[in-house]
Image: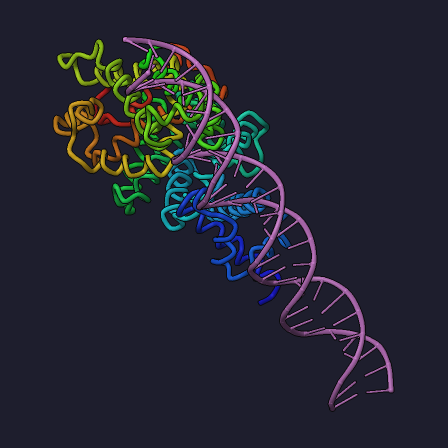
Length: 196
Length: 196
DNA sequence: TAGATCGGAATGAACGTTCATTCCTTTACA
DNA sequence: TGTAAAGGAATGAACGTTCATTCCGATCTA
């Protein structure tokens, strides 16, 4: 096994275990076993468990954003972009449930809270497609006159809840349902004076 | 100190510590210290840490539902009831941030997942005000023709996101903002063919 | 080429720490 | 004085991390 393979094996094993069982259910010894390496070996590649987890998260974030960027066009009307982006976020996590579960675990841990604070209060970065989209909608008065954070909650809140429900098996998110859900989210954020 | 006082002290201490620090940051010794009792004493009142936590949750649930029941009238129009209930849920947790944080911790732990499964898939109970409300709206075609679970996500998802943001200090949920938020949620679930 | 030598990667038993829980002594009260 | 409550040190299990040792492929030497 090559070095980089071993590194990836460790990250994959940790990702799966943490997603399935939470941070508690993923001791280093178990991660090592699933990765097919010795417990000590992990420390040749990662300084600590925290560092391992942080690295998994950061790689995950890169992967997700990359995937969402594909097929996203700034030229389409605002509504189309909103529908498209929301749809693809849901589709991505339906197809990669493990990623969603890991990110949720991470975000509900002490690491994640600091991160969220930085993200929402800090400057917008190129990656924040959704944030730019909502801000543009507010500026152009296509969306309701509400603070950005509230629009985030209105658009993202239902998506998170839905994905949770889907992954726990409470409902099945097929394409038809995703479409209806995303359009309902749009109804939540858009101005109601005209139709659509 | 009376027996029942000691019991309450222990529950209150555990509630606060878990809400503030998560389950990790609340070892039994620390709970005991904050409650002003010995570590062993806790076990005179609760079989185990799990039992203590479960009991806190269950009492919390009772308290919250009781508070929400007040002033809820089945006679008002559907929209009014939706607005009223959502508003009070938000107000309650803005005023009792500790309760919200504890419930979030609990729901994101192994305990909580099983619970959610039972709740959403099981029979509706009297307590599930929101669930009855949404179901009635679906039946009477005031709400969009969507599965109950989706309506839940549309109505509850933003509320959860908002409360999280508020408690972390990302925004301030005053009455004006709560009103706008709740009305936007209504736009998400209601049928769009007529106004309001 | 065969064998010796080397160096870094890999290992997993051992360590120290943390924690829930137990146990035994002390205290309070009737 | 006898019984129940309270206390907190003791216990043992689980965990992250370390480190002395092993392993293995590359390199050197005769």
